[in-house]
Image 1 (cartoon, rainbow, N blue to C red):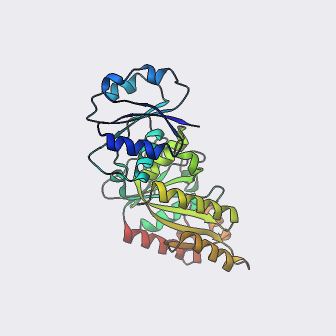
Image 2: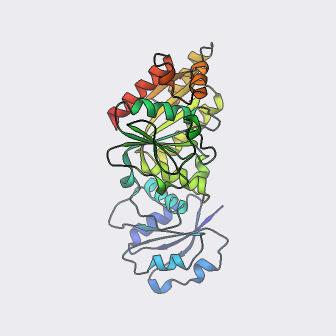
Image 3: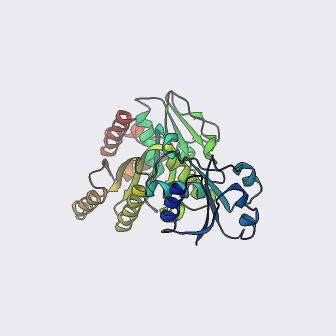
Length: 333
């Protein structure tokens, strides 16, 4: 679907660059405003069935906040700082960020990243994302204070895994680890002295998520842009490898500064293991990664007791791998 583009920039040089970049993607130029007098509310009301993106700057001379109140959810506004230089990728990234939100998007996406926030996600259908988030958080809490956030809109299971009721208020699991379920991103009750692990479940199709106005797509992208670190989990499956490759391509364009750690979960001891490891390593191109062995029995015992793996068998291979991951995260956060 094409997105109508209206530019209202005080710098013609920046405006030319913006138009050139976006017309190569899913944008079509509706109007190039030369002065505030060129603006008419009919521009955004006559074709309200279509999505519209207005790109302007603070010096152009229009009150975009007031105009935003007069419009519907199909209008997005991006305010650029024309004194800064933007690459083509940055322009496209800022445009897509504006489309994901209902308010103006300022060109400061990377500045809102929290250094101590870690996002847990993975390929579609990869089981164990919440299990790994919980058990990594348990190991990490032995090293530092932390908050574990259940933000999986499709299935909030972390509270159930530890025998708690789903609560939108933070509750203490031990002296260093708290748990909170959330329905919206601004509900996170983090403190200055703690790290935050956020479980969002499986990643959506990224080519759709960048322009998805539904709650799930917006929420995932908001989480992605707020965390400095990301744990991406896959299992031993060729489709998961393909999704990993697509996710990597997305990150190169939209979140190149995000620190990504890859986990190969439920790794079996089958004859295909060496070949799959080789394919896995080739996809991630030398980035940090960990292998999580398949330990159904130990995890099932932990689930039945509403406990974590380290409370059931702290010497197992999976427990050691989780401990190594927690130590690594503590060093880089």
